[in-house]
Image (spheres, rainbow, N blue to C red):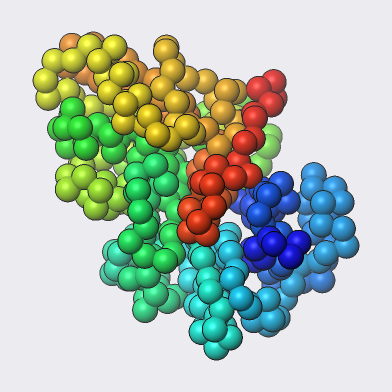
Length: 351
């Protein structure tokens, strides 16, 4: 443990937190220093996440008031707290680091640091931002789209946003399509969080498929903001999300109009070239399938072209590539480690 970096997980009892803990225990250069939870303080981690078995022994969740005790030296901080709560926790952590002269790397998987200004955040989430003074220290992008981090900390895009961005950013960057983009996404029930609601209750979700928040989902303005920052193009995004009858994964269909005539083969090769240095994004022949990526940190993209109509299919695991896995990629990069460290996860396929 002496040569490994301590990791702290804030808001440690949700699905994304459970995935972060799973990744940390398998990571060659990290060890869990503390998982912070107000609701489960003192409860052993294995009692909340039985799938982790004895990975953390008798280690228990730490109460928020003890957070500062774990901020010393170099610390990898992941926040998996809900939006609206994460910013305050991150602010407390940063304050503790200043007081103790600690060196932090921070990745937030909530929505609290995905926007450049408090006004943008408040327009979407209709509540005051919990730490507006920290916003200029954060950047928001998937790892494949920023070669260097312009700030010390990262706000990871949402799971739907990740799936759309991996398809849309190269199309806009390469100027293959105009700004009109249509996206239809289907997500598993874990995307709704651990706390059950009427629409995520298994008898309702099983063998069912339905749209929700059509054209008004909060990840749409997030995608627009990231695309604008990365490509200097502000897309007109029409996004319709759906709830699927499965637990994990997102299947996204992104459609746009080609500016110039291109074949399906040409588009596919251009995407392969675009992601040539990023092994977690693979361009497949035909249409990608969820079973090939669920449980892993991979994104599979597929292409279809008919005349000037272009479709890019994007599939990811919402909890891994869309949250914890992407966050770990960023953390590896911030810490100067191999970006892929601890992420060679192979999906089980038959689930």
